Amino acid sequence: MNDKVLAIDIGTSSIKAGIIDKKGIPLSCRKIFYEEIGGDLYNWKTDYWINSLKKILKDLPQLEKAEAVVFSGSAPSVIPIDKNGNYIAESLLWLDNKKIDIEDKKSFFLPKIAWFKENRKDIYSDISCFIPLSGFFPYLLTGELKEPLPNKGFIPYIWTEDSIKKLGIECTVFPQFIPTGDLIGYVSEKGSKEFYLKKGIPLFAGANDYLMALLGTGTLFEGAVCDRAGTSEGINYCSKKNVELDTLRVLPHIIEGFYNISGVLDSSGKVFDWFRKISGQENRSYTALIEEISKVIHNNDHLYFFPSLKKDSIWQFSGGAFVGLEIKHGIPEIGAAVLKSIGFSVREVIRIMESCSLDVQDIRLSGGQANNSLWNQIKADMTGKKLLSPEVKESELIGCACVAFKGLGLYSSLLQASQEMVRIKDVYIPNEKAFSVFSKLFEDYSKISNNLESFANSF
View 1 (cartoon, rainbow, N blue to C red):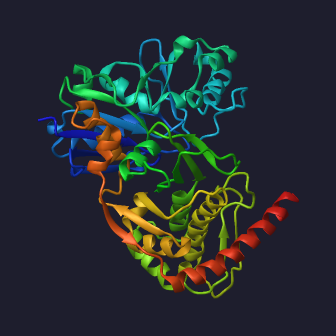
View 2: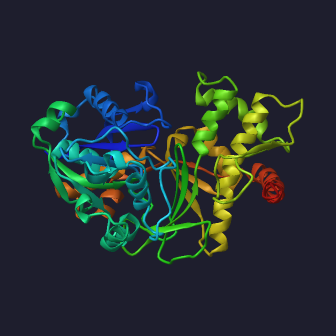
View 3: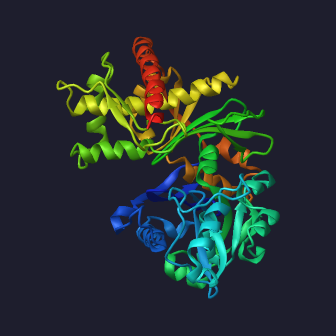
């Protein structure tokens, strides 16, 4: 029938997989955190990805009904392949520090590959290919070494032949590009046995996870905004015009003719998980924790948390501090300070965008944080913006499904697929009184932040 596909997102902290029908309805869905199989982001092994995917697919209901497969993956993560065609244990994650400065300032991938060439000389000569994560699993399933390319505008941000040669690297160790939505290959007998899939079903080229989230939330028209939150968080604005500002990242959009202008919050999910751990609440549900925090977060309390004292990026958890901490403050108030730091960072990105004449009317939600309705309302109150929550919060999966159905010919374009498959379920409208309180706190927070940056620069 070609009306059910397998969508898989290889994230930073977890793998998500789902069987999706042509209307964008998940028939089954699973999520596995790498820590469940002993995965450690700071001592990463390629097998963590492999074992997690095998585990998630082995027990995924209705897997046998999938008539096509599409992957998305975090970038710029890179996996070295040896001359025997095998992956090596040491992958290069997007969030590690394994990169060096190179002449090409646009490429996100070559600084990591240059690091490998310089620091792993013992095995570099055995490498036949460096493949990004979005092409790695298609390779395992089909045997085809190809790197998905959303459109030609992305080439400078991946690699160019000229930039490769300047590093003294052979172009033959890089896979050929293949347009997103094109057929990479078919699931091989080996791929079928290892990953429980039907042999011979087509695998289409996907893209990086944030691009799939844009598809999966319908952030495809002028002025559309998506807040994609997970381990990190990105506020993505769809625009026909470019802007030049150091604090905003400008890349091509998955839909040609548009730019994706984003503010990247490096650690929003990570810092909240840190708070849970240091406060001994790892085993409490997010719902219970947010509910407790919500009882105090609207208070006019000037306890603030600053994830970083420097603004070398918009938001990064490194060298942070609490300000205004008093003996009266307990876990709920400290949690409220952490949540305010996240919400105010989102508001700061919006402020920067609007200063560039990028009008933000409402924001589409994506990712794990979008599952908590109370947090969604608090974030709406903090930012003063209407938030739109789609039926499927893990929008990367819907984006992958859009690509798969376009590849199968059920939809004529990615835009048509997204229009048919994405539906807004819940709308969160800012409470005027709460927004007024948060606005005063945000002004205070911003002033203190600027003074703390001056303080930090004195060291």
